[in-house]
Image (tube, rainbow, N blue to C red; front, side):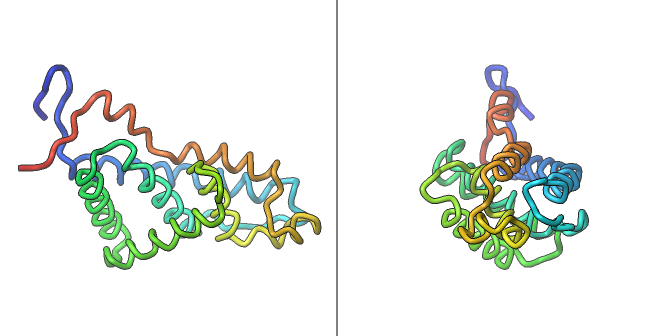
Length: 182
């Protein structure tokens, strides 16, 4: 890492590596708390009994939400390269094909947009997608179940929990200048 006016340089690939490792650590350490929040929610008639080991759908939702935010922090071109590095590294981590992972993320982002419309809040989209993917509607009281909409008290708590899983790009960009390798 070379400094440039007080900022160290990081390659796009290194940034992706930091992101993947950090985000996976967040998921590994935080998913159990999200499961506890969901399973213990008084808004449900019966507990959903989600498995703290079943974080697959959650991981894709968190990844999709974070990838959605990347263009806000990086220039066109650089955002796509960083996203590709992230997908490569997550695919390797989960021993899956990069294109298959990209398709799963794309489908999840589309679902997030549908469930979140007209809001633009990423955390709201993530919370509503967790609600959908884990089929939590069937545990709600009749009124909200008939609306096929989450109880607003529950979704607000889940939304606040999901904020924990958004990567803090501002902090990284305050310390580092992200450069293309080579």
